[in-house]
Length: 376
Image (cartoon, rainbow, N blue to C red; front, side, top):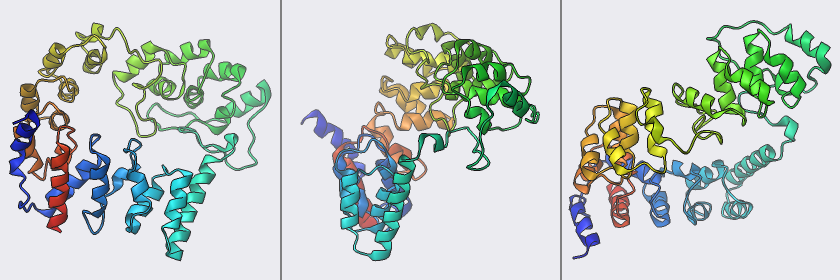
């Protein structure tokens, strides 16, 4: 018996005559759709596993080749509509989608979606809506020109408190490429103005240094989210207390200046979010993963729980961790032994996340889809 045969033998708890509850198989289908190792054939088979397909995974930007090609010609309007709304179709896929849609009202609706997406791609550079920046009042609005006008406009900006949620003022955003204007505005006592300056994509070094040490932590946060010149020290400082937002996904961790080497020095750091960065060092090893798997901080343990270098024994241990972040990461870790993973797949409360585990053999994924389809 080969090792593969032995591994598949552990999956006998999912026989072809098994009849799981619909809520369980719905969780399987959602999880498999998000499984980064699910082959194209499995993802395509999800289209037909339900009368109302579960196909949110078509929004993924890392789908295997052929999945969207199959979606745009699928008989289900739900599948074709989701493929269209994903905003990830090529011109050829759009052509095939429209060719496969005979129903005039639905075809018109798809054409409107295509036109809207094309319009967003083709907007004039000056009309692009930047993240974190407020819109101008109207199309006739013009930013101030020259020091006197800038000072006059700045004098009209109301004071805000540190707790106020703010977007960058539109007129300051329009001046972001004006280094002299940024220097004048960066020293303003008005908090809203300084926050607006921090949203600039690029700033002179002296302005960056000034804002990186601003007493307002939102000024510092905005600088790490928007400015490509934010220094590594600031990125680390903000990372220690900011877990990210939907508007700026991944920041500050994915900022080009975020440290990516010499991170083992943080293994003993008192701040948990700084400490866990040691696992990203190319020189880190399984021993550090094991050590962090027993860390007192749940966020550090969760980082270890998702590390594929984790031992199967520790993955099984963390699968029972009381903290959701920890056990959820362990459920999706390929190091998790099949005899621990399978019961999680059979529990509706853990099935969706467990179905994301890349260690599930493709043959078992196909069986899960078959059982889901047979259930309905």
